[in-house]
Length: 408
Image 1 (cartoon, rainbow, N blue to C red):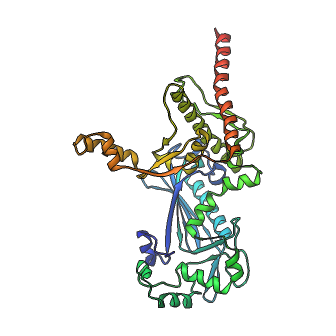
Image 2 (cartoon, helix red, strand yellow; image 1 turned 60 degrees about the horizontal axis):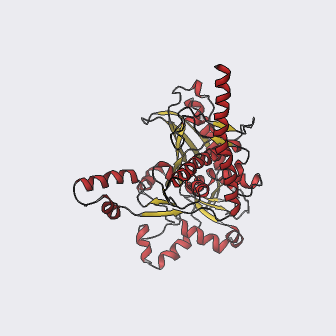
Image 3 (tube, rainbow, N blue to C red; image 1 turned 90 degrees about the vertical axis):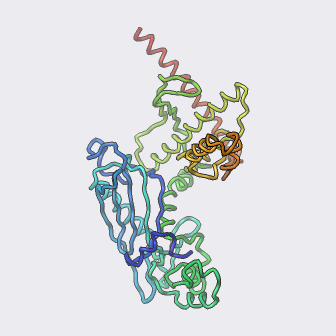
């Protein structure tokens, strides 16, 4: 758990702090980060990117366009407690500061949440303690549950670091030859020896940048509990989507097909937007299931899928497809599989391999395999929603005929 995670971290002494970086696709509700409507945007509908830097004393957020131009930035202070060598913060306070900075930056940049296509986190290498529910667990002598972050520059674990270094373990060569008390292992040992109740309560120890990603992605998991849903997919029981907003290419081949969203309410909350996102992912998977069933009904035997491209990196997207189609999905070992495929064609063209199949076997292999849920309730749920999915198109054809007759 060394603080020196990557090449960027080596600039930490110049910055006065140690940092890590995390990035992920943006799924930010506009009500949570945007202060301006797309119609008022300086760059309407142009994709922008959000960077968040959580430092020792503040959280900063910046909005950038595709050329790297800063469109707007803001910062929000973070509370810090200092008692001797112990320096602590609150993950709750940090999150509130991040949200405030993001909202202000979006307002200054005059962009909406829909325009933010990706975000990345940079943060100090501070240590965060949470229980099984994700709630803060104190790391402070004071017992204050808010103080669940040991800040990177905390020096409470000097004795523990010296003890670890005294073993001269060959592992130390991977972290510069010795451990600093600012690194995570000595701090963990200090907590174990000095705060046994905390040690027994903590379910997850996370680096701050990891915790930020964890906190951002807890929304759907929390909704399952808050809404008393039996499983994640069931959050969408009242929302049904036909995603043919640009016609249907396969298997219906109907360019006149239209998109349908059934079950909307006046609820514009963050929770409802997340459920709508999940329902959209499921609708795309139902469309894929329709294609697979159509192929199998015409003599093919498709029982396994291979996924590649950008959406293959979205774990929710892949798991929903596996559950809905009912077959394993293989992810290639090489994430840039489309580029690799082009290179394989080049290898065959250069006669390095006699056949395309030989080149594929030599240059690529299967990576992770995602399997459908074994819960029979999940299958029954998706079978029911798939039936409604198919009926939405049949009803659309009927409605189209009714209107055509009215206008004839």
